[in-house]
Image 1 (spheres, one colour):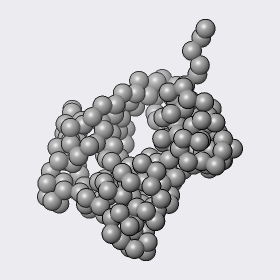
Image 2 (cartoon, rainbow, N blue to C red):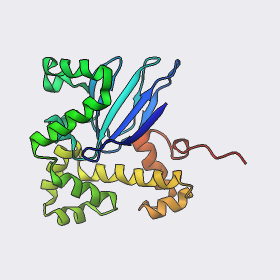
Image 3 (tube, rainbow, N blue to C red):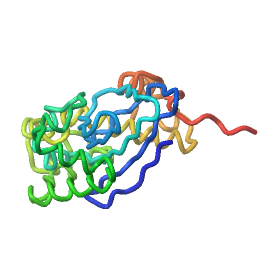
Image 4 (spheres, helix red, strand yellow):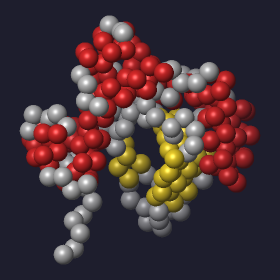
Length: 232
């Protein structure tokens, strides 16, 4: 019951989900993103950037619509540093005021996706767009660049990069690099690449290193995070 597609604004992804009659907790893996959410039960929320997997629970039949903002975009939309939202799920009213959010929540009940896209587009327009540093840093780290090389590429010393990264992503560049490397590794593994080869291609010392880092960030080793093998 989960679907996602490009949102058409700021490189964001819109996703929808409806919980079954007997929902089980969903393991949400860290990805460096912030999400603007609407829940049929809880209203408008913000999901901050996670350092480890978050176990999300839903009520039976609860409907969700989310707009996942790429790394570094969230602060321009929400008006607060990402580090203030790290590892948290916060009502949007706590950031913008309950009165301002109440009208949005009423409209979201009939078309949450359109409301979220409209809000994000308007907030980014008012802010002059996201900080371009976020996209540059995230792209370099996602491509496997070291933190030192990334700092040099964007013209910052390591302390300045750490400070700006905490504002944009919610954590420092080393943590973001680990999270983005894990996502590259899982994408390869889900495409059928053996784990030993995945480790070698994504910069881990060996498969054991990949397993340790996956467990540290998600609570599980790699194999349970992969789709089951196809029947013969």
